[in-house]
Structures are given as C-alpha cells and as structure tokens.
Length: 246
Image 1 (cartoon, helix red, strand yellow):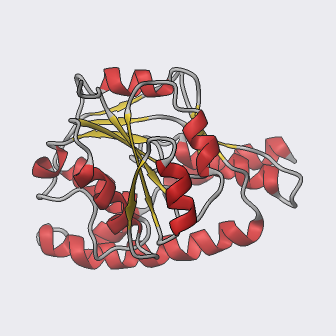
Image 2 (cartoon, rainbow, N blue to C red):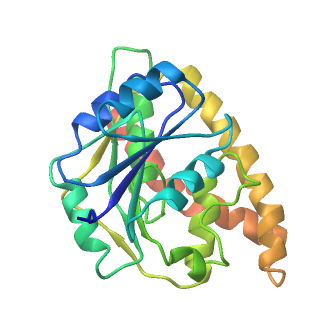
C-alpha cells in the first residue's frame, strides 16, 4: 500500500539522524540523502530507510534528490539534527490536503555552550516570521510547476529556502503556517552560527543573480532586500526583546 507522505532527511554524516528517525510517529516513506558513507548507509537501510547519495556542500541538490525520489504526493523535508514533535507529521500531512506548502514552527534547543540561549532566542524569532524556512516544510509534488518549474535551485548551495520562499511569494501561493506543533533543532554554538550566517549571506547573493533572470522586471537591489528574513521593520521588536532578556 502506498504511503500517505514521504519524509526526506537531509544528512551529511550525522549520527543524530537516528534520533530524527525515532521521532517519526507516522507510517511514512523515509528517504535519507547523505554523503557517501557505506557504514551509515548500511545501518540506515537495516531500519527500512531508503538511502540516496549526494555530493557534499549543496543543500539544493540534496533536497531535490530526496524530493524527486519520493513516491508520494506529499513531501516533508527536514534535517538530521532535528526531531519531530508529537503529531507534527500528521498535522503537516493534513495541511497538504488544502495547501501546496506547509511549514512547521522550528524550535532551537539550549545547551551549556556560551551564548547558546541567545542563539536559540534569535533563531526562534527569525523562524517565527511568516517565511518558508527549512528544515520543517511540507510541499506537494506539483509545487515546482507553480514556482518557475523547480523546487530548489541547484546553483544555490546555501540559503536555499530564501530562494524558494521568494518564488512562492511572487507567485502568490498560500502557505499554511502551523501553530500547535513543532520540530526541535539541536542546540548550536557560536562558531556554527557564525559559519551559517556567512553561508546564508553568500547564498542570498547568488540567489539574487539567478532570480533576477526569472523576474527581470525587479531590480537586483529589490530582490536582495526581499531575500532577507529579518528586515529593518523588525529591528524595533528585536531591540525590545534584547532589553527584556538582559
């Protein structure tokens, strides 16, 4: 019998992928896209997981490999350093009955690392914005045909969701933002967060160039501003939040 949905897990060589698998509480097709790692692949396949190999360093390619291989019409994309909260997958499946894009809230754990709490609060604020961020989105198989013919841009290795979110907004597609469920992300340290910020900036710059070819009536400057999740209009709120936590 065909499954209701597919969960695609983007994984480099991360042992936390087994925690993610354990949190899946629905009978779904599971695809893990990972770098070449025979041992990890064998262990995953022993649990009935479909494993696909991707080249390293490009989240667009990783995501598209999993999406294209999915045999169901509903595809949920997450990362190996996340776990699903109770009923999250079920609510995403239900949401995809009426919407082509569904997004679950994303919560960052807090660890004992320096500034872990501040990083978590900042990430939680950004992820609370009405933006289609990964991990934690659900999409239908027909979505690419509605956003210029592709899901993620293979030329964009990082900030891949900013590119997708831009096209979703330009095509005026309705997004269902879930409220009462969530996906939990592993705690991050300062080094990882700064490294991620640099990659996101690079990805947005590259997206600006490619998106300008798709939407030539928009200036590159305007496209670049649209790709930013946090805008100047949010700064007052951020200042208020910072004062309340100090």
